[in-house]
Structures are given as C-alpha cells and as structure tokens.
Image (cartoon, rainbow, N blue to C red; front, side, top):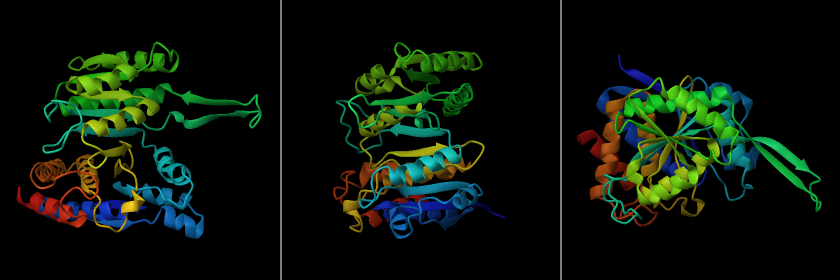
Length: 355
C-alpha cells in the first residue's frame, strides 16, 4: 500500500494560486513516479476572504491545520487590504501558533541563471540560512509612551529565550551534519553591540558546538556577513541567526541566487506541521496573465517532499528545475522566461517523470 500525505494548501492572493497550481502539478507527477500519494485540501485564507467576511484566520483553522502532514502556501498580500493585516494575521500567526520555530532558506545558484556577482557560478553559491522564526523583535513586545506628541517614545524589545535559541541552534547543527557538504556552521550576530541577546546566542552556540566536534563552528557579525555574501559567498555552508537578521540576509541571499523567482523557504516545526512557500510576494499586477515564474513554488514543493522524507522525489524535482533553468528558459522575471507559467509547470513535471 502506498503512503499518503495529507497536505493543506493555501493558494492565497494575487499570483499565489497560479504558482501553487504549477507546483501541485509537479508534485502530482513525481508522486506517481515514486509511488506515494498526496492528498491536497484547499483553504481560502487571504485577501478575498477577508474583504468578504472580515475574517483573517479563525482559531478553528489552526486546530484543523495541526492535523496535516505539511502546508503548501502560495502568497499573501492583497492590494485592497492595508499592509500588515494579512501578513500578521495569517503568516505570523501561523508561524507562532503552530510553533514553526525554524525558517529554512536554501540559497543556491542554479545553472543558466544570471548571477549579479561578477565571476560567481553555481560552484560558489550553495548555502543554507537557518533563521529563528518565533522570537526576537517579531514577538511584538513593546509599546508607545506619549504617542503623537513631541515627547513620543517607541520601544520594541527583542525577546530571546534560552529554549528558543538552543533549539534553533541544535536544528542548525543537525542540518549541517545531514547536509554533509563543508560541515561548517556560522553564527551570524552582533555581539559587539547587542551585548545581551547575542551573548546568549554566542554562549549557547559554542556550548552546543562541543557536541558536534566534526562541525567547524565559527562566528561573523551581520554586517560582515552582508559583505561576504557579495564578495565570497563560497565561504558559507550553513548559517544560523535570529529572526530579524535572518529576515534581512535571506533577501540578500535571494538576490545573489538570481532573484525572488527562484527562492523558496520552509517554516519548520520538527515536532509538528511545517509550511513551505515561495519567497516572492503575491505580485498582483501579473495576476491572470500566465507570465509569472512558478519555479520558486515548485522548489518549495521539493523542500516539502524532503521534509516528508521523500528524498529521492525531492532531488528529482530539484534536478528537473535545474534542467529547466539551464536549458529551457531565458530569464526568471515575469514575462522574460520565454515560456508561460503553465508551460514551465508542464515542462518541469514532464522532466520530473523522465530523468
């Protein structure tokens, strides 16, 4: 009897439904090849639902989503909804309430993709950022005093717990060990200025490092990291960092791997349900034009398969994407691929069944 995985799908807003449809197409093809089943259940959370019902994400949904093996997200963001409402009410709520405490971001340059860095090739850009996903500045701890007056004070605190920091760091060491590439883990922080939060991170990092003698553990300030991403990206294997710094450096990572059109990520709860998504936004101006690039969504599907333990299928999808970028498309941006959204999905699915 074949294994069946139950997947919650949130297509979301704008071009989200379009890229998710192509991702599901590829996932269906590869699941048939490798002998497992994917049971997709659709959820309509996003801007259209909010505009009709004023409901963002009901508590009943969280209970239901916990029962799935994984979640597959398109994009969140609607031009008729004030920025922040959907992002906080859906994305952050899912991450926090489902305790998806790891944000996993591979940064890999695929064949055929133009890199903005001079003389850098796929051999130079292949690393992963492990970002703490449920603490730090994003907790929203703080407030205003004398708001709206000349004496106004705004305070926002970065909340870092030993438990939260340690479980993120342990995940990063284990991931580095499993990846088994350069066996190097870099802590990204700012110990010379953020002397409380990153003292905790640094102490915990080197304490845990003693349990992994085969992993080369080192440290770099976040500002140095941004320089070296541009100058020497080949120095990095796995990077672990807090919520805010991770948010910033992963966008820089997306640019050096060719852009948001290829960048995918996972919001991971190793003990619960995890969510996988393309990094780019909903791109509403391209909605319905069949020109948006679905490869980031397809890559997110590959990450989901790896998380589910279907490593061979995951690798097949990634290899198919690499063949598409190396041989079949002209660019990553919407309208520059030389193929339509559905044609890219069809081609990737076909290659996934043949290679």
